[in-house]
Amino acid sequence: MTDNNDPVANFPTINRQLWNDKVDYHLQSTMYNLPGFLSGIDTLNQIENDLLGDVQGKRILHLQCHFGLDSLSLARRGAQHVTGVDLSDRAIDKARELAATIKQSESTRFICCNIYDLPEYLLCNEEEELFDIVFTSYGVITWLPDLDRWAGLISRYLKPNGVFILAEFHPILWMFDDAFSRIDYSYFNQHVIVSESKGTYADRNAPISNLCVEWNHSLSEVFQAIINHGLRIDILREFDYSPYDAFLNTVKTEDGFYQIKGLEKKLPMVYALKATKSS
Image (tube, rainbow, N blue to C red; front, top):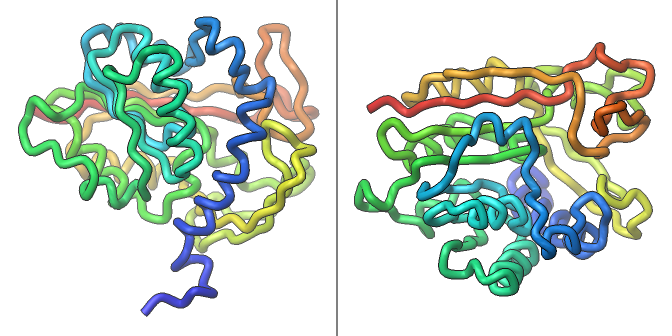
């Protein structure tokens, strides 16, 4: 029996509400730049572009896709088909609407579910239904309690010799308080983190307040989960900047990226990897 007052047991419901409430503010934000996307701007960053390479003719599974701007950018690049998955029903509704607006409905599919429930929605019984690329990026694994199950899903949906691409905020960042003035949390996944979230990273003044349920995952936990499920890590990179102004107390670099004020070029802010499923 599930305890309705237990945030850990109810993390999908709690976090779905959190992300549903963010959608409208993100759509209006300069960070997501929806008008620019609709005019043809590609939303992917150089960090992940260097690992994705040419996606022409590829089948791509995009996990935790939000309202699908990156998914649709991949479709615009000529991917054969892109399937986006997200917990937020409001985000998925918007992704489908945007796909229709830019005439990419036939080359995309958007699924709303808890990522761990994906096998109930996406069967892929034949090898040709599997994916050449599984992709996920920026602020994704902190919402997941079990990386072994996550890596198992990635392996399940990849073709033999298919590749997994991850671009993610560095776990060292999640050790700090929001202002980066002190260390509040362990680098390691010692316990669930339940907190109150006010506003959103794309609009600090958004009048929303939500409970959120998160987990910190060390690099070794991420890498070992991937390795344990038959993937070989071919490329691993770390970066001392974020492509997004998603944190408090940042400064903008000459290249247009973001670093933590007072800790410029001292902290890793993003890591990215490419892993290949064994044949």
